[in-house]
Length: 449
Ligand code: UD1
Ligand code: MG
Image (cartoon, rainbow, N blue to C red; front, side):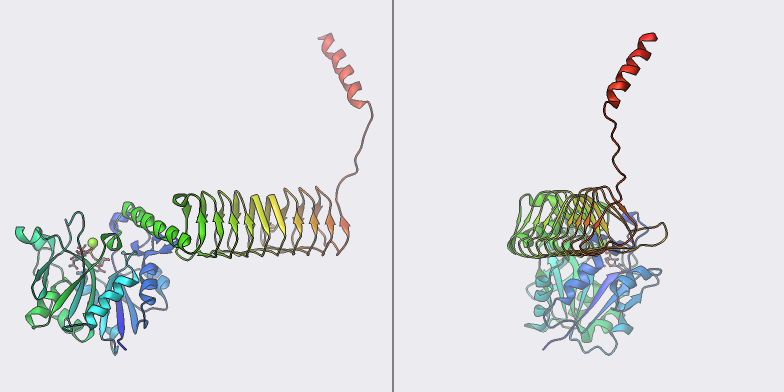
């Protein structure tokens, strides 16, 4: 069994993002870019022997995002070779035979491609370095892969390349699989006598060749290599990622009427026979069971939907929402940190926060759980089979017992026992003929003017 370690480069602040947030923390499909990369690495068959993320100074937020993986800080940004060398201590004692180097700002790289690289590294000729190459529509700015009958000879950066070398269309994606034994010895020999005055990781290819070791290229699709340097490229990565997620959802048995209008998070889980109407957004942490219908204009995050649930149109589910089997959450209903139990209905215009709505309870239009008293949040408990009439305010903390009835328009501040009726409605006053008298009086008043 071969063992693989990985170094993820994430020291760049990403000046072109014009952001206070380190570049690799910008999300694609609701997940930080660097977490896409570490997540993909984790899925490699056989797992990883270890994983180190190289970050810049003052990037505690990145360290937190990648925890429990260790980070190594690159104090000065002296180049990609220098960056990888910062992981030396963290890799010390590793018994991996291959080290993968991946960029933290390249979120679309796939497991299949990384697996092909590891396989090539372990394969014929025991190459010292495997480089992931691609043929971009526009090669400007990329390192060029200089090949011969023996494989890869060298990588030449655009700024250091001759005219002839610049005409090469096969480019360096930046991803490499390196013989773990050779990694540090090769990097220690890399100098910075080049156009940028940087320690180039790419120089290890020429150095390995001069030692008589072979190096090879594995080719991949340009789309996967998309590196994000600007908000425009972030949007491009988002588009590609959304397309992949929509495709995956449909392949797994969901119907998307207008897939281009549905937005997923990388961690969205959908069951079979899920119907999703146009314009639905899934934030992070959503799990949907089989047979759920999500109507147009719903927004969900941190929510679990049981089988056969119907949602929307225009429903908003916020974190901590659990809608159980067969329940319905309808139009202009917001639910937060609440459990709506099996078969319950909250069909129109309601806010359910910090609550339990018992099985088969019916919550009328305009019902509000008043969960916040200006200082703290409080819980509302509505029993199974309870009926809460329209336009009811439930001032939490409060309990409505099983099967209880609450009359429409009530403002409840005390618990309602099971099987009881509660209403806070003022008595109706009626005066017969009052309106007729008013009209006559007003007619006289206006005549005199
Ligand atoms: C690099 C490659 C180039 C390749 C291109 C692909 C080298 C010398 N060049 O060029 O062959 O075609 O990527 O996109 O490797 N980083 C650090 N510390 C540093 C420098 C970089 O962590 O000191 C990180 C960056 O945050 C980034 C990655 O390494 O994630 C690549 O750095 P970048 O400056 O974009 O390299 P390029 O010049 O684009
Ligand atoms: Mg770059």
